[in-house]
Length: 259
Ligand SMILES: [Fe+2]
Image (cartoon, rainbow, N blue to C red; front, side, top):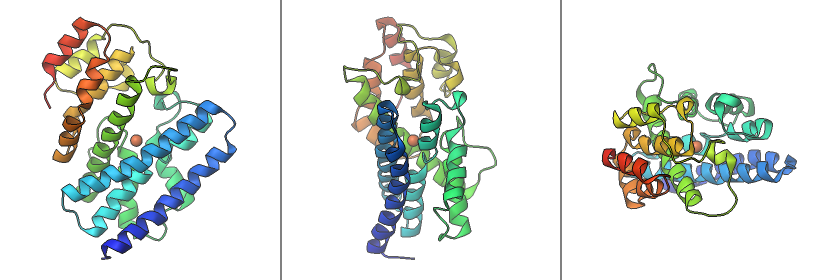
């Protein structure tokens, strides 16, 4: 076990390691849009790591578990940089599953070679599972705990990003909208899933409204009280709801929201 000061030092070492890895993509990047999205994911990775620390604190985790939480958050999207550079999209179904690529990158780059095998396994499992619709059924114990933790931390920061984006007029970032149609309609399958408190699948999305509804539906997949509190405090759900197109659609959704 290590003390608080050592924990901060170790965190910094791994943060610099990730930043160095990302710098390779930034330096080689010649496309402004790709660079913008790489930078967006870099900030997101750092924020998710910070959110993991906040959840760890709220759960009174010890130093070692706090470090694991931090590393899961920091590296959860490590596959995104290669994904966007190669395919110019964050859509996994049009490229590859970025969680799987993330695990490959971690192994190839040997980021965690100095850590015990059990910790490496926990991080890889959390990275793999963070972006799946649901955590795989065979994930147990610590691997399950940290997968849940990073999924919450990720959602909290995605709420921050999209709320800021939805409230900004100006050029659209197609990558953030998954290239969907911005029409004042909602599709039947996502709406039914939402009403039944089920998560919405990315494959069922046909419009930006559906996409926003999917983001709202994440409130049914939160694992920690801290996450619910912060989402309420920042009014992320109301902010997303406000930007849904079509008054009638908005009202229907509103009556089913429980957080
Ligand atoms: Fe993420």
